[in-house]
Image (cartoon, rainbow, N blue to C red; front, top):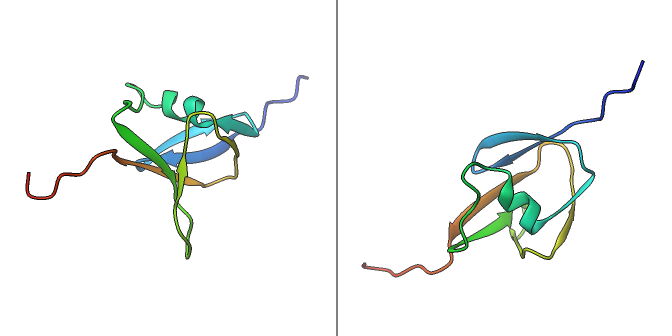
Length: 80
């Protein structure tokens, strides 16, 4: 019997994704949601108790079960 690939549950903007890869690039993470995370939003890795990490498209991330990523507008215009 073929071994099932292991799945890593991760979250992007509170939506769960089960990924089988042990590492993903920022671009691959951005492509998981439908529609993909648009270019006008930044992607961050949530770091509990620390400073959240901005993920660039070319960054390679070691995937850990239960990791949370979130997106924010690249440009914030207060008062607009």
